[in-house]
Structures are given as C-alpha cells and as structure tokens.
Length: 334
Image (tube, rainbow, N blue to C red):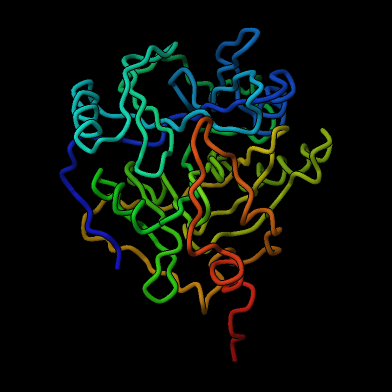
C-alpha cells in the first residue's frame, strides 16, 4: 500500500529545479549538452558552466563543475515557493535529525543543503537570478531544442520508506510499480504533472537520471542522430520508445562522464485532488515501454553516486528477483 500523503506539508516544494554534476572535462561535457541536447550557456568560467533550457527563465537548471570526483552528482535541486518555506524546511530537517546547512550559492538566493533519510544530497532555494527566455530566438536553437528540466530518478535502498518520506513533504504519486505488496518504483510530483521525482529500488542513494522536456517527437530522433555524429552512438543507451508509466516518448543518453540524461515529450496533468495513482504490476505487464527495444542491462543497475554519500545495499535488488526479471520473464499473453 502506498504511504499516506500530507496535503498540507510543513513547507512548500514547487518543482524539480536544477542539478549539479561533477565532470572530468568541463569543455567536453559543455559541448555534449549544448550540441546534442540544445541547452544554452547562461554563464561560465574555468571551473563551472551554468546551462538552461530554451524556455527556462531561471539562471540555470544544470550546473557542470570541473572536478576529480568525476561521475558523481553533487546535488539535486528543488524550488520552494517562499523564503519562509526555507526556514520551515530547516526546522523540519533539524527536528528529524537530518543534515541541514545554510550555504552561499552563486546566482541563487538563500540556499539550504539537506539530506533525506538515505543520504540523498538535496539543495533547496526559493529564488534564482533570471534571464530572458529563448524559445523564440530560433538562431540560438541547437541539438534537440531542450526546453526545461522535468524530473530526477533516484535509486533508493527502500522505495517504500523513501516514498513515505517524500509523501510527508507533499509529493503525490501519479503512478507506482509494485509486485504483490512490494513497491518497486514510485513516480511522484509537486508541479502538477506526473513527475518531479521517481524512486526505484536498488543500492543507493544514487542519481539514475535527470530529464529534459523537448517540444516535438522529432527532436528525440535529432538527439540520437547528433549523438552518433559526435561520437556517442554507444551512449544512446535506451530508446527511442514510449514509456508505460507517464506514456512519454523518450530516449536515454549517457554524457562523457556516464551521467544519464533523458529527453522526453510532455505528459499529463495531475492537479486535481481526486486523481488516484495508477498501479502497474511488474509481474504481469511490461511497464518499461509500450514499444521500443529492451533496455540494456546497465540501464537497470548503473547510476551516478552522490558526492560524499555512503552506499546502502537493498535487500530487494532488481536482479535476480525483482524488476528486470519480472519484466523480461513475465507470462506471455494468450
């Protein structure tokens, strides 16, 4: 059974906002996200590059940091609605005896660093510098014309407990993946679409992928073509295809450090309170795709660790007794 949702949470998270990644070669990573995804550079220096999608007004949704800690994620970022929500968040995490620290972050207002019960590194802010949206400036269009950041997917050693924690913070489930009474995946949201945060059971905490919305289906194929042109053919890891949960067209790519990014088209609204979560049965239904080739083995098990976070093993690993086996060995339909 899904955990109960607190519809009046202690502070108001509004959406998935930004992600900070450590990279080994800043220039190479920058070129990947500009030339293939079509993100635009807002600002950069010798050690940091700030990027955003064409329809984003806030200063950044992706931050690349030159680092020896390659293939690690520094933080995933969420926005809160008001400054007072930051103070309430600080009190909440302190009361829960979870890490909470005020930090100075460039181009953002007051910023709070926190961790969930499994050590996922999170950054909260209420304000960010703004820039002009570029979605009508056709001369700046490159790559897949990525518009805005949409969601993150995490590996958690206990999906139910992670889902329960974020449910206390007001996250609602649009859909979930279960086998019997075991929750294997939770697809959660704050902004009124079907996703801001997906949680899948595996050793963690890890960042499995982050996603950008593209405006048209052909942009997904353009990203695949450009990945091949720029030498990342093998890093077109999964898709194109259409998801079961969410129903989105998608493709997953791996960047020069192995960080996984998804491009997908838009999805449905979930604003109304009477909308119930959709249950997907992992044992009898292929929830991965409505159509498209099966995922590579590495898609299920490889992910970016969080910088400085310890790994916790899950007692219910996806192989050989859960997600991948259920999907690949499900009973054939008559």
